[in-house]
Length: 316
Image 1 (cartoon, rainbow, N blue to C red):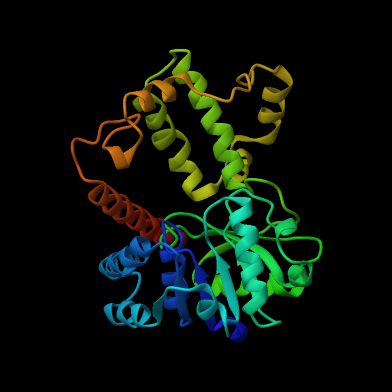
Image 2 (cartoon, helix red, strand yellow):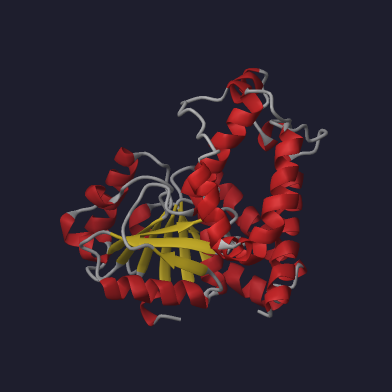
């Protein structure tokens, strides 16, 4: 482990923060986890316990390691006592620029001069929001949910960020068992989310124009794209198809991009019906009355099983 990151403060204990805290604790870090919302603070230890237990049940960590990690996480109410003395401050608060600006200002007031600030922002350019004197030691470290399952982490700095710190972070995350991607410069959505957005827009067009059902579309992804992409990605898969063939496909210009719209009619209808996704019991699919917590645990178990299978195939 990179020595400077032994003491970690995580700001925001909700959907992302609790999992990020657990991953750092599993790596041996002492973690203070903070949230302004008392209800979120009350839920977080249970969510961490469930996640740690699932990792142990799936064989990714031992029961002793899971218990030790939980013991390294302390819930804290106020930001100053969370940040003071930390080597690394992970910002995982609500995606609102003014909220983040306020949080960065508070960090600036109480944190050590040599602290590293890592924002988990999913789409904001946070660099203009950070006090200038902190720019050299600030970066984006963007995790994917659930953070204790998904390996990908995006790492990107501003032109002011110390390149050595970015490399330190890449090494540190690799030591946590993650697959960090160090981007050359910031772009909204990073890589995975931009590709996902392009795929989603095509799916919405297929739904709205009546070409296919949600099941048809997801089956095409699961049994066509994902089976190959899980092992080979997309560009390597292209090598297997043969680049001259793909060059010809491009030249034929048979594909037309969907019109750039700011809405999906199918999604609008579902939301109007109260079908907002897993948390309401239905979205594009109906989940048969299962509780959200049950569905999320089922998702995580399946992802962990898939992850284990892929590692076995790759010999990791």
